[in-house]
Image 1 (cartoon, helix red, strand yellow):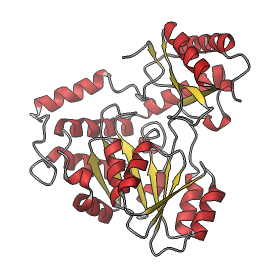
Image 2 (image 1 turned 90 degrees about the horizontal axis):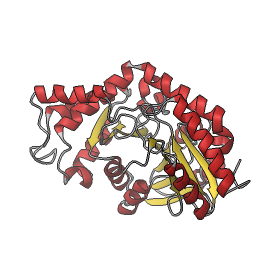
Image 3 (image 1 turned 90 degrees about the vertical axis):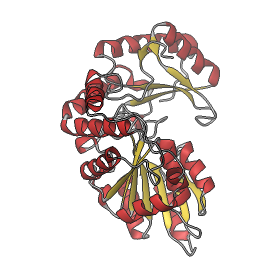
Image 4 (image 1 turned 60 degrees about the vertical axis):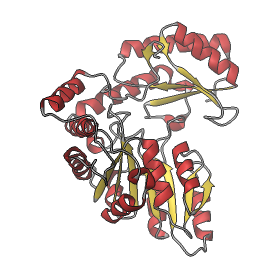
Length: 357
């Protein structure tokens, strides 16, 4: 349950409980759109709302095709267990999401990590690969626990050089960044060797996830991805709401302008507590180090009325327990100021001098 003013959710644009979202639901009910699909997409569950959403997403995100899944976890599971083939090599950022790891475990390709955001390590492994298949490079555009960004331009250049595929997880960037909220991948998403995952339950405020990719990869997923084939199709009403959210974000630049202002204000008030690599992000990791003081500071902030959560291993590496402060449009600038004051007081009380710069 929420523990105070929202500084923990991923509802970055404040759409999850917004009245405009309620109006979309009322519209769906007026149109007679049902909640249940009645079956898998390949067995009676394919609805006009799914098709309309995927066509809308492909157009706005500037890609060849899109495929809707019930969750980001399910989408990553499908992607990594299906697209890379036996003989291929998946090189993944060491901090990539757990769902990608689970997908790779179910897949046929060899997998290896590269050091987080380390282009030298990535290129060395690409250069040293002599297998029979293709290289896949997997990264998140914005990392959910560190607030830092992948060097996507350089990664794209390496993938072009080595004729590799690039998989970008835009879960925490879609809606917040990029023209019309498309994320940080920009025009890369239009390239045939790029596959992008965009979740719909964070900044878009609904649920589900979209894989945007070349049409041939979409067809392959439809016919081979077990999480797609053997799952009941997502709710048609949810598909309708996701489409409305994508269109709303794309046509309402004020949302991005407001969250950008929140980020700048928070950086001015307590940015000194956060790593410089998180600059410009709506995710503020306040690294404490040890588990006990991190959780004690989180509890003190919650007692003061701020919903800030402590994050500890194994979610983050040992010795990097932290507060994950998430900025959303559910809060005001005055509430950010109040959190800054409470954060400084709590850190002085429980962990003086221990914050990482």
